[in-house]
Length: 464
Ligand SMILES: *Cc1c(COP(=O)(O)O)cnc(C)c1O
Image 1 (tube, rainbow, N blue to C red):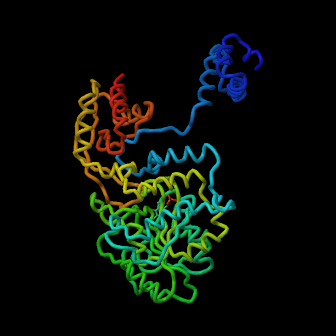
Image 2: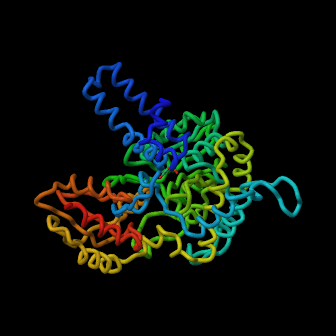
Image 3: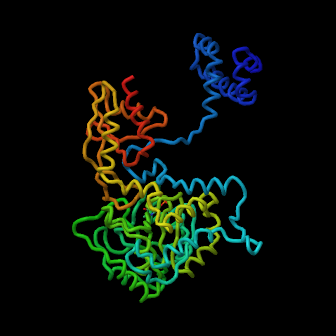
């Protein structure tokens, strides 16, 4: 080991990267060689080869250990809220604010005026208050006809549902329609989260049909909560029925049992003007009289990963007092990013929120860019075509909602679609595309315009 690190060939590496980094890397490389010998994977000839190339291996190892595993990628899938690709990109204001807040100390839990301890949730509660309590005609078209709401933030929406159920229904029954016992993915299943929250699931109705009467006849002295879950990743069509939110809220009011809705996406804006229908806004639900709404910060809101609970002040206060709230709490990076995102809503500056900007791009806007990209592609073995297609909202929002787009379709007589996507993934930054009917499809809706050049370069390099 000492010899290796002192060898002339390694000296340059040590001078550049420091003794400690090289020693650590050498330890790992030697361990691999040793393991190779003891397990019999390395025979004597290989060993000679291995040792002669040790300096180069060492250099690679140092480099590998010092590069990030979490990397930016170019999302050319056209799925705007892609859970595997980190969901919503943040606004520039959010990045600035995080930088300012996190580079030093902040008043995260400090009341500057009073000079004493403060509450972290106040930073965003005031913004939610003005977004959800005032007459925001632009967002709803109607004024807020619901009692004042307050809002708390936890790590993600799964945590929000857990906290809300545990606070409102521990050891009691929660009535849910059988058509809403959903799995969102990543092991978030309503029956399981219910069990973890120590509430008892009381299923009513059938998969396709649940009536108000089903809820009503299931109510007993053990009932603590009525729960509605937004079908965010599937649809039930055909012979179906489901009570309106307003019918459920009047039942809840009559029987003095709170109604909670897990909205999932929780848009703050009505998206029907851009052609996305059937996605209720947070205000729609509160306005209809839902007592507690849970939603994600990084879905249609376009902010950081967070679980947001808005609702009746006294119910939210109980959640704030639950020790689970402390266990599930969000950090200052989240509060900073969320505060900055919400301020864009307050200023009506929707185009500065990347996912809203992407959603509002017209097919013509995208086609214009796609034509320019296509005209600059010079890859002899690749055929490029512009075709009509659909972008997908994704991230558990309006399951069937798509937006018309113009796609770059790549095909080749030499490379398979898998070879093309694999080469695109190997470019820097990696480009993620989708494959349909043996063609590789790239949707510029989710590609930032500043990345168009990188897309051109990467495609041009495929044939090399
Ligand atoms: C996405 C979603 C969740 C989970 O939210 P996370 O922020 O991913 O934890 C829960 N419920 C519904 C209805 C959802 O769409």
